[in-house]
Length: 181
Image (cartoon, rainbow, N blue to C red):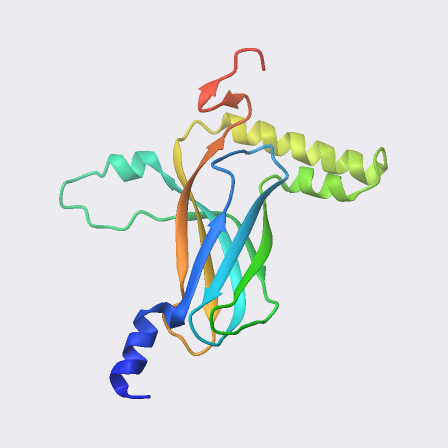
């Protein structure tokens, strides 16, 4: 393989296409957000890790920079992250689907795993409600995105894809306050 072929391979993200499906709108009260990732290889590749990450950027910072010349980066805050570290070998033309679940509300996610009515399930339910109260008291507005990436062996520029997602606060329906909540 020549030098230009190797450069082209690295710029082509190693010949791995990544796509994913996730809900367009989720609630902070949801236990999990399902993310279905599809990896397709143009050539034989080894995938070492698949990562899904939900990030938020403050709308206040994004649209109200202090000065016109302010070039400081707006920090993204990771809200949830999940890694699948199971190694995946893809043959040329082969596609593989990976199911990931981003945890939105830790208390609700833990509560789903416990026997109903148990003391630990009640504690998890209380934690879920505390997180709901905390989330609803935050008056800031954010832009949310889900980013999915794959760690392809031997490739320095790993493939990734980003999609916007609407995250509803407790009591919101489609971005508007639900008066009856």
